[in-house]
Length: 257
Image (cartoon, rainbow, N blue to C red; front, side):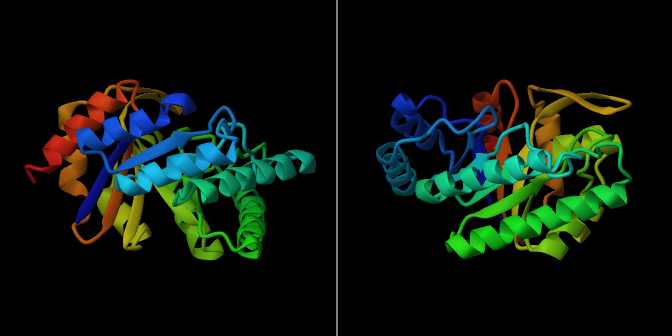
């Protein structure tokens, strides 16, 4: 098993190179760039510099697309706008040398889970066609979601991957919040692929699922690391409010495995 650890944030463009150098010094080999409030890296020269720095330091980059994406909106124009946002992230990501764009697929929008799945699947197939047409290498990764009333159970994401050929992001904090426990054997069966992109953090949740992320406890790290498959290449992105310290702890604990 190879694990790359990294935080969910690169920070401002003006300090991006120093941030990547700091991550490298800490032993991080991954970084997810947060475009959750919109893409903020817009100049070609910035993209080129960040890409070259990440490659030189052996840091694998990924992108998290905007929060306001819904591939199952009742309004067709909102679905089209969501697809454009994902493709815009892909275009920038390709220039950054990022491996994938993580995205939240959508809401149920007063539809049945089956209807939502059908609509989201169609949109993802459209996105896959656009990526192929552009000849981009970047993948789009549908994320498992933490609220019970949102599309994104482990079964739904696994089916989406199998049907559309898209990539995936297994968020173990979200699975815990949604299902109230993590069935690691089920996750391994649903995602037999040799490469996993994982999100992890502590999480506060209630009956309806996720409330907010929190600092990752040492015991939570230990449970995750003990249950990860041993035959895969895994990237773990920490999304807690204290993501640098948490990533350091996860990395240190992994060395003791």
